[in-house]
Length: 510
Ligand SMILES: *[C@@H]1O[C@H](CO)[C@@H](O)[C@H](O)[C@H]1NC(C)=O
Ligand SMILES: *[C@@H]1O[C@H](CO)[C@@H](O)[C@H](O)[C@H]1NC(C)=O
Ligand SMILES: *[C@@H]1O[C@H](CO)[C@@H](O)[C@H](O)[C@H]1NC(C)=O
Ligand SMILES: *[C@@H]1O[C@H](CO)[C@@H](O)[C@H](O)[C@H]1NC(C)=O
Image (cartoon, rainbow, N blue to C red; front, side, top):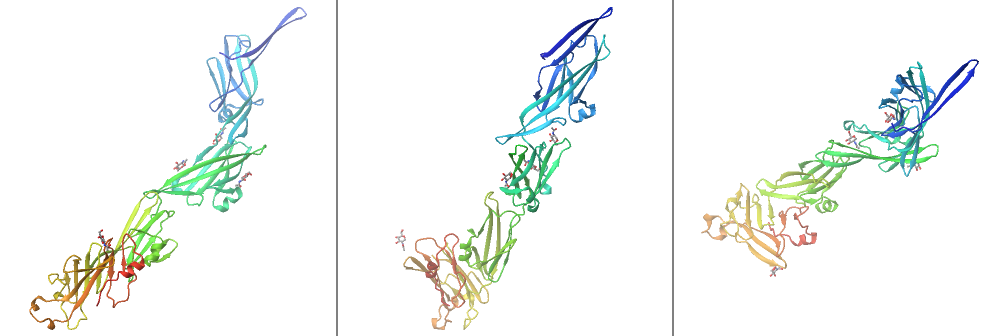
């Protein structure tokens, strides 16, 4: 069986009056030490000591005890002790650290380990031809040294409850928690409560203990990362610091738990048209601000706010911003008899996921007169003739080329749209600028034969200025008679410095 046993057998003969008595004495001890199999301490020895019993014999059972006291089968079971008889061997298995023994903690290079001592006692009983009862008692103190034991983290987090819940254990009596470090912040045990962290001691039925830490997901020590699709990852990193008595050694255990939850309220945008422009309300949502905001394709920053003359006010849960008409960020959509149509596009883009939301809001501002110079060379002119004396029918006005009539008219207004290369437009080079000049004039076809002195005198010069070489930008101009606009011109891509814009006044002589 490969189990070493030390046996001492003695035969004693002595004479008593006319009788000779013979007494057989045997002592048998397995010399093998306990070994560790998985998480069990295993101690084995032969099922039968031939020195003690002779076949044929009957087995009358095995009992185990601790420190000279028998354990009931029930208690032995409860503690996980097992006695297995197989192939002529008896094996006693005790879970490492089981109740009845003594656990001791050690730390080496921050590696936590435990040693275990148990004073086992074992009784085996037989019956053979000679004796109805033979008992063998063995006393064996078993000592298992320093087994690395990484504490177990039990993760009881239920994402729907929004609280991290972890238990770290199980420790023997000689280990106690001193403090924790959460999200990089040291927290003494006594402070935890005041900081909204729940830290408590958890005793286990088997005599060991653990520590429970509960941290709500929205707590500042919990880090958050947006994953896209309204999911976010909450991550809690914690270092538990323990002291081991009596040597007062320190042991630090690091744990990280995370939970992905679809609880993100994304930023949202509301918009409305105001007298001055377009008002945008940017609701922040409930996630760390990791978004970039663009207005009409321009990155929203203080420079843009200042350049565009935006009115900004920040509230707890939203940002309110008014983008004035004609300012950078606003897009020209079209000019018609109903007025000037513009739109503001606000784009919110997540820095990490690239997730994008685009909101576009369109407003129509009633205008009586306006001149728009488009980057593609188109000129759009809306003329109001309501105060012209004698009255002029808007149907009978044209550009320099009498073939270029208005696109739309109503009782008092005429709308022209033409390219700077057509309708008799004249080009004048002024330094590095090209001026395109035309004129809206009264030229009724049926009066072409009459003398010009009989015409109502109605001529309105209109024009656009563009760089001779270079990118054309959008320009929107009101008649000089009206108060100046907050911003008379803007470009979607390149921002023209104010001085350059000032030189670019179109000539609109009312
Ligand atoms: C004691 O109980 C705890 C909690 O049930 C368990 O994690 C630990 O492994 C047990 N220890 C032993 C030695 O059985
Ligand atoms: C935690 O406790 C240990 C042992 O008392 C100490 O050395 C350490 O400085 C403490 N850390 C904090 C953050 O309080
Ligand atoms: C802990 O529990 C949460 C929620 O059930 C789960 O998402 C996570 O994967 C678990 N484990 C760790 C190591 O965070
Ligand atoms: C524009 O460019 C052309 C050719 O590149 C050049 O001949 C002309 O002088 C330039 N005009 C101005 C105003 O710079």
